[in-house]
Amino acid sequence: MGEKTKRLKIGNIEIGGGAPVTIQSMTNTDTRNAAVTAEQINTLAKNGCDIVRVAVPDETAANAITEIKKMISVPLVADIHFDWRLAVLSAKNGCDKLRINPGNIGNTERVKSVADACGERKIPIRIGVNSGSLEKDIEEKLGHSPEALVESALRNILLLENLGFYDIVISIKSSSVKTTIAAYRLLSKQTDYPLHIGVTEAGTPYSGIIKSAIGIGSLLADGIGDTLRVSLTGDPVNEVKCAKEILKALELRKCGIEFISCPTCGRTEIDLVSIAEEVERRCSGINKNIKVAVMGCVVNGPGEAKHANIGIAGGNNSGVIFKDGVVIRKVSAGQLADELMKEIENY
Ligand code: SF4
Image (cartoon, rainbow, N blue to C red; front, side):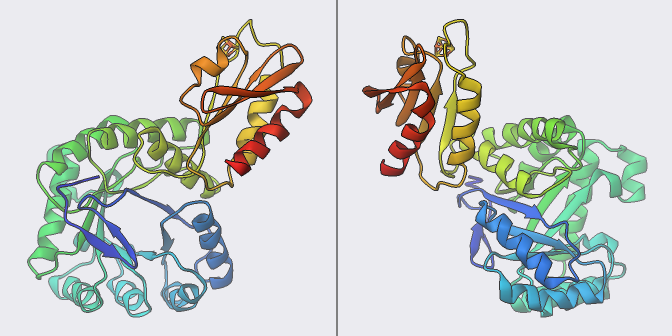
């Protein structure tokens, strides 16, 4: 993905230049509590998160990075607002990437201190432009338009480039899906730095997932985006699960079982909804790149889902198991889920 972007290393993970699109998330624990934060990072990693960001609001949080790093294996991003000293301290303490906007740091000397601290350690910087925190003059001239986001990003890029710093990742997020898509499309024509994509403050899971899927999905379908974060209110594990589904849907990453099920109709004679929910739940922890189908009827199910590796189709208080498009046996309705799981494990 992002074939034309520059390739960068965030810890042991590569982004840009055609590397697989990576999934990011952010902890919602108190970073100063290293043990609790590391535990959440490891849970996110177990669920498929490639890179995790933590907020660094003060010196104690910046110092916790050293401890957190000892307990995790995914790259860690330190998120800094304004305070250049926290950025330098986070770099010294071993973060793998910084998220900071050079334009918010103050004078050039301060920006240089941050760029030097990162440059010496090969730590990339993400410029994270957000429609809610644009520079005043840009906001006055261009409002919260896509052009405003792009102009802010280019201005921040220039601040780093003028100091000889080029390991840059850029994000230009807005809570408006349309603005986000338009802004990234514009920006991708003007830069070859890797792009971190997402819709900011997308909301609670139901609306947030829809907004993120449209925003992130549209960009990825255009070939734009090297790494992504789905922003959802609540447990960040949901962000990772949603990101995986977006990447799976666009066939950009193989992230475990792809689950398909029919919408049910008047031909359905079994409780397909419960079976589908159970199978999806039981499949979520299995790391096999196969397609599993749960279909309502034997008449159409195996045919409609013939591209699935394994599936079930319901009948009259019974059902069939099919494998690579061929029915292999008949089982009672109550055993469908268990028998399907057995086939998945042995596939
Ligand atoms: S697979 Fe069968 S039950 Fe499901 S929607 Fe198609 S026809 Fe209806």
